[in-house]
View 1 (cartoon, rainbow, N blue to C red):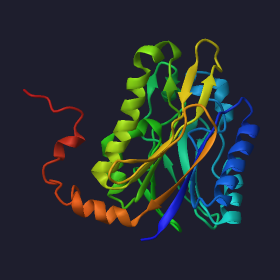
View 2 (view 1 turned 90 degrees about the vertical axis):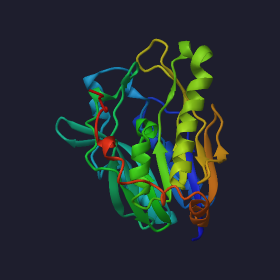
View 3 (view 1 turned 180 degrees about the vertical axis):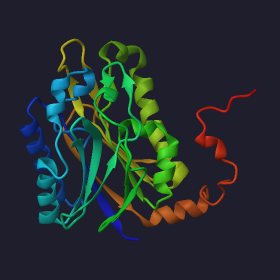
Length: 294
């Protein structure tokens, strides 16, 4: 299997959706010119992270698929022959909205979409107000430059999601992300929170013997006033053995380029045959909310 270069787009987001889209498209073009064949945006890149409050006016930020963002990235994909994964606030129908990632193949075709399955509802992460849980299931996509799976942010805490995506043949699992600190918690909890975030995703790479990449935004956003959220960046790529292959800074705009040797997947899985040794006859309890003991 050939090697492929992955490009992650890490940047800050301002209050102009048009400017944010222009910036992301510009970065995608730069990544392609620097050799990236698969490119991924951060989560909800077209706006600041509006889920810090429950406001009906924010639904106006959503767009259809196809729509302005998909058309802009399709043009980049066709021009440069690259695969692009782009995060979209999707307006599916009146009153029905999703947190969605589209996969665009190297010829500009829209291969499909993944709708975020796990929707958080935490302080300043009020996503349940905006997003209907996904109904696409966990998917992988056969693109010109490799078989990729896409999950989104809160999905990254669930090993079941990564497993079901890998079992469909994904060599690379991408996580468009928007995660940061509550500024008042950063001193006491910041390091532990970041380490947990990185560790769980590295564990997905190890358990499934595939590449995993997370792309996060940067900047301190206060669209609702108050303390807001300080997004910690640090987008990264992990190999099938869990080692960090690339990691971005916490506060700078960056294009993270990483060469992925896809042939290492088979080597890793034969040395660590976790897929071979799974006891698929014994996991029925995973479909239960909790295994109560009577």
